[in-house]
Image 1 (tube, rainbow, N blue to C red):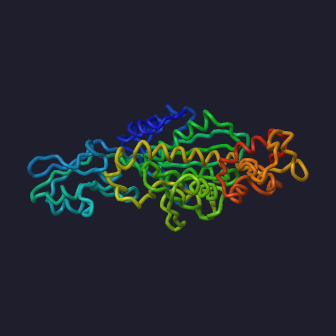
Image 2 (cartoon, helix red, strand yellow; image 1 turned 30 degrees about the horizontal axis):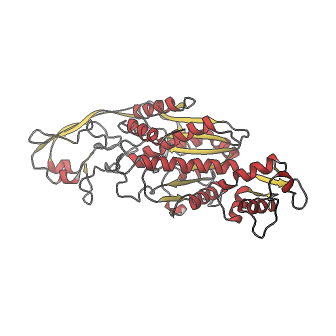
Image 3 (cartoon, rainbow, N blue to C red; image 1 turned 135 degrees about the vertical axis):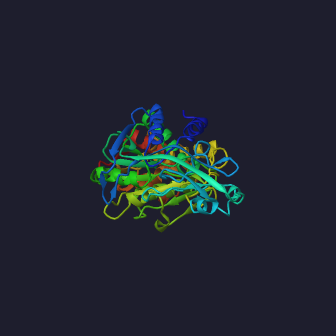
Length: 428
């Protein structure tokens, strides 16, 4: 049984890695995941390869980066916090005035203790991110600016794990692995997905096949779709983009572009019965890889269940998005358990047909009380109601929604009815 501290300990291990859309930080992250899910395959796509309207960028590697103030103090040191440098910054070795330097400094006046997270993947520039409280203390004089960074033809990496079930119908679970030192917006997703994959592969007898992918956001999902779209369109019946699942605030649901896929229905059903409240967003509020999976012409059934949605919590894309404060052990584990329920519901959700005309004689099978009373036991009534909808046209989720009960609560009832040959699963 997976324990809550396993997820948090794994997050602590991955947190310092210098991740970007390419590079050794991504590879180190994927190799650590392989220790937990050994069947994970790491793929490489060369710089310059086309993916629809995009091109795989060069790799980026930072050796060192910092600023020396006029009084000799080192600030914005990349080795202290990798958020200090704008992602994909070019090299620079220069002396300049404070006025010149200000054009390359980025801070948040309304969050003076936070280092912002900024990137410039597709336009060459350099810059540093700094706490605003430190920025306003900078004095006039000459500043030594140092960035030792490389852009070179290399590879973009992503991870893929296929856990095969009885059928080729697939559930796609995607998360991204490209942000450095941001606990909720990034790291929570890969951590939850890694342990969800471990649980599925070790403990579940599956009807569906589960495809996990760990990609750099945007460019990674576009690259993956450019190589696998036709297969995914043929096989994927449900999908989830997993991000921001580590805090203890309310849950959030962001629909697929269709809005009424199996993913959407299961997501809303599980949230309804699992949490006190959740925020529902519109497709127009999207901002992660669901943009690619649900794009016109791709049209995969992918939605998102998050805790606080990306962009909707104050620590988002800053150094304040920390383990232990924003992301907690309980937050990660609760999200893990919720996604376990998602998987269980998808697995339960089959269509059944009664094999007996009129009501079956449940008493002789030990499934009905021997003494007739005015009040039927709750479980018996639920069983009879379930049977009444087993016409081969209604899925278990359809019936659970009609009966206004959690689908998971029907599992034992379904097992009993199948074992006693009262209902049988419809073949697809």
